[in-house]
Image 1 (cartoon, rainbow, N blue to C red):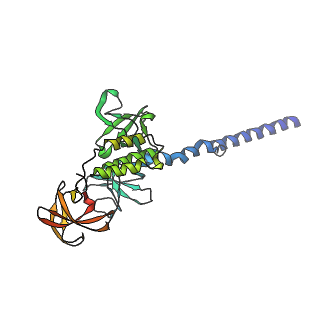
Image 2: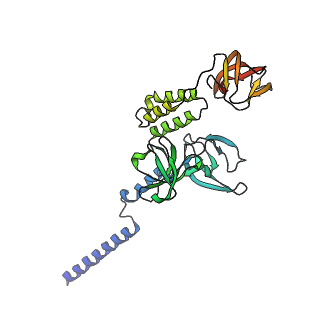
Image 3: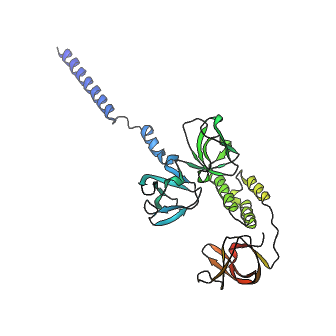
Length: 315
């Protein structure tokens, strides 16, 4: 009888231990494996869905949603922002504003249409055809040319990604072969610097900016440096004017009675393309981000002062 009682006791203890094990397992206390649930949370901030790419130059960052809110700063084409996930509809403007954070920590609101959300910044290493849908039969006739900056949005369509160019003038799907594009920050920077250089109206300033880029050791490892050389070679050299003449590069350039842009001293205006005679070179002055000389000029019998930043020695 004693043996039977002991066997019964052992059986009860075994059942009790098994039940405890099942209870702990069902509440998750017994399976705290850090490799199962924590890893995806750690990687969440790295996903492109938390980023946006600005597709317009000078997109406004404001302290609240709406064009009447206080202007904080401008966001450049190709600039990457962090998305907070907050959005606000402004019915009077028929716009959706998104809250974004810049790389310098500034946080504010911007027009959501001006961004590719959930995107990464890229530059084309080779020409990339644009399709209306992820289907080779839907070719739009557009392409992202070598060196062109655009935004890429990952998709679940194997071998395809959505793509948006500047101001969404090119938009659709591209075949995302690794050899056709790059998201490397050096390659992207080369593409952006070429874009900025070509925004200059004066070919001489284009050439100067591209030469600085070509001679920089920072970008020498980029496969796009040959593209920089090709772009340089394509800039048509313009004939220089005589030493006593200037070419006007700006529309409606004010000609002033004194070398001072603050006073109300406008005498008349010159148009882009006008050629005038130099009577005198004044002092070199910095105005905001510009740094150049004042010139006293004469055109069709009228004379006055113009700021040299808006002029060129080539036409």
